[in-house]
Length: 168
Figure 1: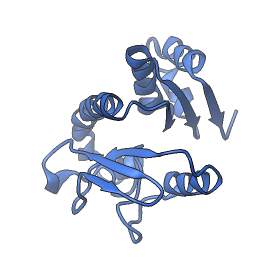
Figure 2: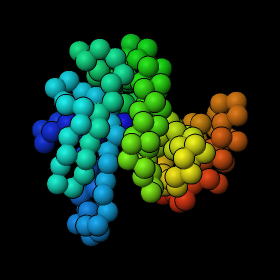
Figure 3: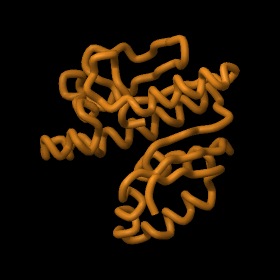
């Protein structure tokens, strides 16, 4: 995920964490592992009651601020953060592969089509791991505005185990 709180007072939206806790209470036999971007003052790997968390590095610790308010919100607040995005994406792909190799998940669940569901598609092709994705707002529509975006979106949807959308 690109948005995951580092502690109880972090202003980052908590919806993914809340989903995990809710699912864990209903299905205690499921093990959850969260891959999220590094933030200042957060250790790389932590085990909690409901999930384990791996934080991936994408730049010098002092400047790992893309997750301060959520990825898009942080970039909107500071346009210069767009320059961290390529490093963030490369690190996200690398660490997604690394987590799949280490933990061998049965299912990958991601929020957003771009970039998470695209990376989940890559993981499916590499490791034959099923994925489910949630799409919010216009993230799927934005992808279709790029050359090859519609074909990529169709591939993401067709290869997914399931998907959830809160809009048309």
